[in-house]
Length: 292
Image (cartoon, rainbow, N blue to C red; front, side, top):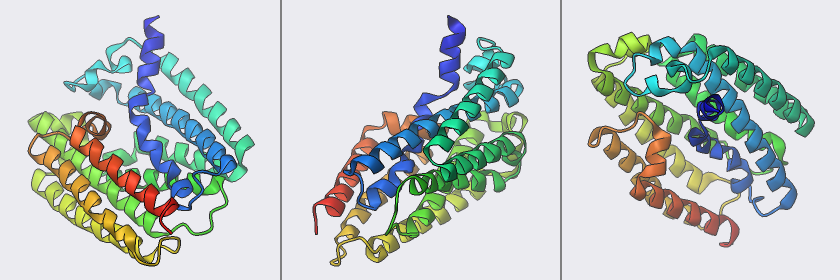
């Protein structure tokens, strides 16, 4: 049935790769090949994806009128009418209840984090996303919560706080890039679709992007030679060029090819970016688990 297809699409499984940051604690604390921590993290990842899906449903319900005016978002199931708003609301409530229950069975502190994640997302959908700068900073908090969730499910001994800083800065970098793309796409009608966009301009967003991209590189560099579980010869610093390329490539896609409105689509479609991320990931795994 068409509403089932619409429901699945509204859960936005193509955006779930953003939850990969949930594995940060497992990987960077050198527990990736331990069975119990791996299984607990995978279970938490699935629950986080379901929680994200429920939030996307609520967001589509709240934004359906504005989405109908958007050249791309008007095709979303709720905005187009293929998925009734009432049915989407019921599905969101069921998913939230199931996710909280399953998370509590997995680990009560993790359930508390999921609850905070859901409440903050609801606040974002109805209020916070309309406040310039606060909207982007709230998105950054979501990324930090993903990392914290992974920490809560396993016994972490040497997870560097610099990773939290990197997550915040990276999320701000992506968020500002997304708003830049929306302004370019919607032009004069940007503020009519999302009133928060009236609080931004292309020059202002370019300044923000320059600041957070530079800060991301510095924060990651600090991580590579200060984290307690890395080789003493600072070989992790060899991965910095990969991070530089990933940031520069993303900036190129935003400013030259005018992409950035859907970061997950860029990651899933741009081959150079995919290769850079894979090479960086392979290098990190090699250094953490083989290089001693």
